[in-house]
Image (cartoon, rainbow, N blue to C red; front, side):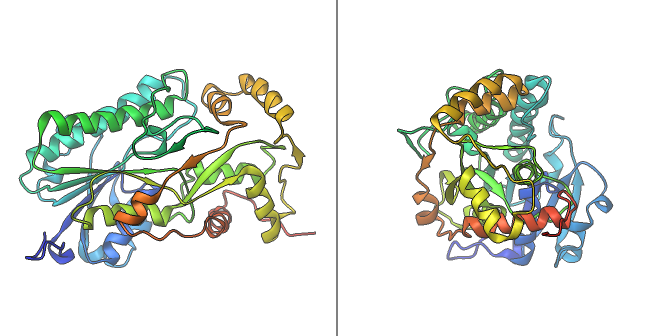
Length: 356
């Protein structure tokens, strides 16, 4: 895996990426192949269903596929046995579900534990890079707190922001596993915020969907919400750097700039999308905050609890650790927004309209 200097040699390193068809994972696979690594991608169906992966440069020579179910004990034993690094990205991302325990918590926690158990059985795995989330750091914005890797989400449960709860429990289970089992590998965790940008595959991820909704009239009003925006290509890069940086450790909050909904809409107007159904009614005011919080109780549970814990609050965080320790340089948020919208149009998730 590494030479005498401790640096990883791509040509002799095999990396397993779980949930490889996902939004972030596909970019991780691409960047690993571009760097010369051998990649084993776990997916739920035959490789032929993922042409956006099989057609990547280097895929024919250095990409192999394996099918596995996250909740099947031992399903990853043989898969990770010949891998040096495992990047565990697979986890459900659904805001509104009927049964949060069954649909979110169980797959997230059991999947993480199963993958780590398999890694512990391998004499070759030396590092696991886990995709967690800002959701495991906090489930609410705050006008007082500047969030960092030292913070943990302690407020979510099955009723309040259940998706956030699932991400928190999954990451907690990973750190508990390391502490109790003391396996032969170390753990590094990536905690991204709102991940947007170009998609390698045709699927619509939840964060890009927000822009599709904003531009198609699903949000008629401007709300007082703030997002921490990070490009999917930078999140993938953070995973690769977390693998390649020998002294990488702990958690890495991966997010670039914060933008309010008003700033996002103003930017969309300025780059030529004013003819879409962008929100025009301004409820990003103290009075509007009260109205929107009342309206939140008419929304699906997941969306409603998100609105109540974020509307009217700022979002501050410290991303200095990932910049200093991994040396990452972020793509500007406005570029990521432009790329996300172009991607929505490319995959027909947003109907193309000519300006009048």
